[in-house]
Image (spheres, rainbow, N blue to C red):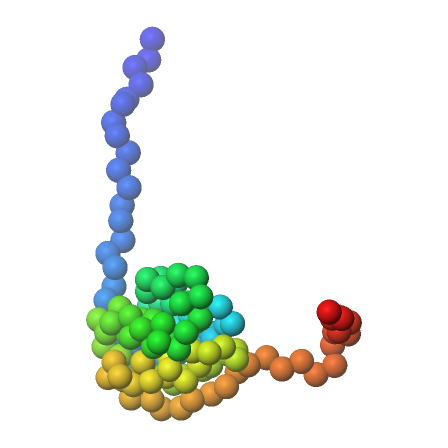
Length: 134
């Protein structure tokens, strides 16, 4: 009878490489009900993110400009360990936290290189639904 070995299998963990990113990209999605702020490196890999909901706001308080400002400040605090100095801002959406999220990035001590509006605007495409009659 062959004896089976019962040696435990250990997983090898890779050491996390600490990288420094001098210039980053801040993607702000200003929705109607929430504001999401993501800080990425120039290739698009997410370094840190925060939203109004993850910053402690719930319900209708998520859709306020103040909550967008707090979310932007929280995202910057998480990403400061990467050595970010300047940011290129891309804003998507027409929500209430649009301008205040930019002020939150400035208030956290980042230099803004450019502010780009990347809101998707339909031209042509599908026919919109009929207008509501109330």
